[in-house]
Every structure is written in structure tokens, then in C-alpha cells.
Image 1 (cartoon, rainbow, N blue to C red):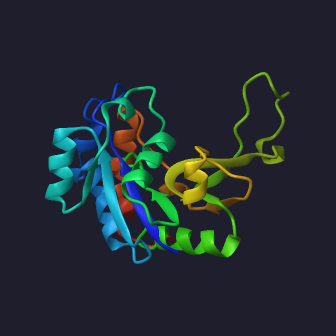
Image 2 (cartoon, rainbow, N blue to C red; image 1 turned 90 degrees about the vertical axis):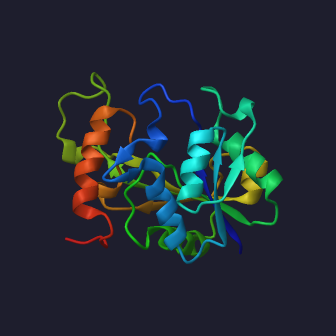
Length: 213
């Protein structure tokens, strides 16, 4: 199977303006995902999908191929699945897409390759990294102990693998989902300034290290 890594990075961001090129631990945020894609052995190719000149220049400075996306795929209402359909139209010939969101900059060195291997072994049509959480809406329980909650798998946005056929159907998740649980410290994504502070600390401690105690 042939795998294409895609780093979706539009220019507009209301939560953190210009976040994809914002410096985090000495490099632009998007550079962390570019370096992860460059280090992955199982990716046949990767690219950055963007509409933004500054992101384009930054990605190229970090030696990443760039695919310009149409303006209509760079609005607040745009969906990542629509971006992936555009990518497959422009770059056909791949069996699956590996999505690497720049807002999840912390990945251990073998994570992408591990996810591809798990995707193949599972026989599924898509995979998501995440963790099992114990979230419950207040008022939906009567002060039960957290350890008694059933919980559910929460996809953390770090790595997704989607079969190309699934993408062409416009589906983000298929009928055969593979859940790739990863250590909690790798499951943080950036939505606001507090997240930037958290990831600054986590990257300084865990970047480049394999998972473990």
C-alpha cells in the first residue's frame, strides 16, 4: 500500500492568530509535524495543504512539499475531509492518507509508522490515535465514582489514517475503525493559549523520546 501524509494548515485561525507559524520551543508550530513526516519510514510521500503564503514559505523553508488549496477550502466552515478529497484529486495513486494535524506537535519517533502498521494489521478502513477518557456531562450522573464510569475512546487529533476510498466517499470514519491508544502525554492538541503553554512544557520533556515510564 502507498501512504500519503497530509499536513492541513490553513491561514485563518481565530483561537490563536497565525498559530501554524507561531514559534513553539524554537521552531514554527507546523515544523514539528513536518519533521515527524520526514522521519516516518512508512510514508511514501507527504505534503502541506495550505492557502496561505506565509505558511507556504515556512513549509518550504523546512523542506516540505506544498499543495495550494482553493480559497473555498480555507474558510471557517471548511472540513478536513473536503481538503483530503482535493489532495487525492491532485495527487492520485495513493491507497491511504495519513493526516498529521499541526496542532498536535508532540509525537514519539515511531508513532506514524506504528499507526500505519496497526492500520494494516487491523484490516480497518480508518484509524485514529487517542485515549480512553472518563468524561461525563454534569447532571448526567449522581456522583458516581470515576473509576465506575464506562468511559469512551477520545480521538486526540494526533494521527489519523484513512483509506483513500473512504475519503472519496466524503467519510471521516468508516465501518471498521481501529483505535490506537497512545500515552496521555502525546494526546494534547492546541486550541488556545493555555494549550500553547502546556505543549511548550510537554515538548521540552518528551520531544524525541520513545514512550515509556
